[in-house]
Structures are given as structure tokens and as C-alpha cells.
Length: 264
Image (cartoon, rainbow, N blue to C red; front, side, top):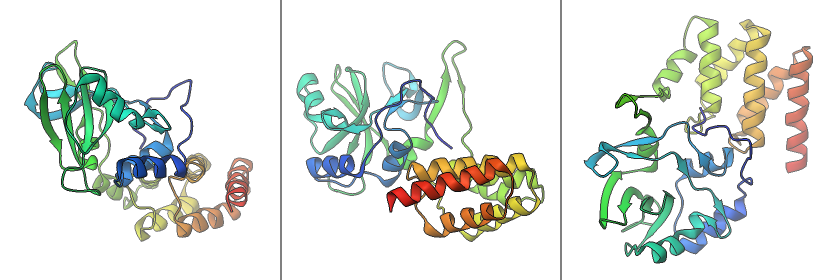
């Protein structure tokens, strides 16, 4: 499931050259899930606006405010890390800044590693540097929607991988369809699992036209955004759509095939 808030003006699409430039500039490997997220949308506003933390800061007790993440483009987004460091007097080395508003930043901390960064919080006014999470994946899991008016934490529930797999195993075809849809849209879920394939086959054997179209649409979007590159998955969705006569399903099959032909 995407964590991005829909925007009228989409940022420029992330390219492999953008990623290569960033990694060469900083001498590190960016987290795979961060890259997958940016291939879906190259930075912007999030559906959530806060992150749970284990420290207290000016934002509040136990959270920091965060409503957007940087993308990657030459001289933009994370590529402005050195500028932000100089502008705001940040002396911490081995970091890639992925979010911030000028007084506080969130960064990937590569101290002691070039492949598995921690995520840290930097307050430029107090020179406070705090640990947020061991991995980028843990950082994403800690995001939620803060209801400031009620001073309550109104959480947007992003289904866990176990919950998605449970739906895919359900006896109820509507739940199976929902599980497949969530699985396809969740950048962190592997797209080469037998359970996903079996659930997809069930939907196209037993599901409604609406359920089939929803899954075909999601698959087409993820394939075109390079969120799905697994060839077994692509072969399966095309073979399932090949058997369908519904015009929408035929259209999605042709769109996927056209995209693959231009990429090849």
C-alpha cells in the first residue's frame, strides 16, 4: 500500500541514473525499500504526519512531526544534503538527509556502514541528534497520523505482511482479492511468493469482474512504475488476463505488454 498522499503535481519520475548518481556521490547504498517507494512517487507529502520516537523534543513527547520525504534528482531532494549541512551548521558526517524543514531533519546515518544505515533525528537549534530506528523499514513502520486537535494519536493502519498473507489465505474470495490487491501495492512485500500466485489464480477463477479489474489495474501500475519486476509475477498476470474477455481486462493486458515491449 502506498504511503504517499495524492498530489495534483507529480514530481519527476525517479530513474536508475538518479539512484546511481546519489549512491556514487555519497559512497553508499540507499535502502532498497526507500528506492522502491521513490519509484512509486519521487518524494512528496505522506498520508501520515508523525513518527513515533523514544525521545522528547519540541514537537512533543514520543513523536516527531514529519509529513513529507525527499526524492532524488540532481541538485534536489537528498542531493541537497551538503547544502543543508552547511546552511544549518550540521557537523554530523556520513549522513544522507531524507526529510526536514530547516530547523530539524531526518537522515540516514551511515556511520560504520555503507549499506545498512540507521535513521536519526537532527535538531539544528539545540544541536540534538537522536536515534529513531535501526533500519529504514522500521522508520516507515513508526509513521502514523497525529490528531493534534484532540492530542490523540489517530493511527492510519497499514496492514502488516502477516495480515496481508492471512487475507490471501482466507476462504472468503472478497478477502482474498483484498489481500492480493494490498500485496501488489505494498512495496515491501515480495512478489515471487507461491501464496500470492495461488491467491491471484483464485481471484481470476472465482472473483467478480470488479475484483479482477482492481487487481489488473494495480499490477499494471506497479509494473510500469518498476515496483514489480519479477518475471514470474508478470508472466502469471498476463496469462490470467489472456483468458479474460472483459474489455477493461483486455485493455490492461495490452497496456502491460506495450510497456514491456518499449522497455525491452
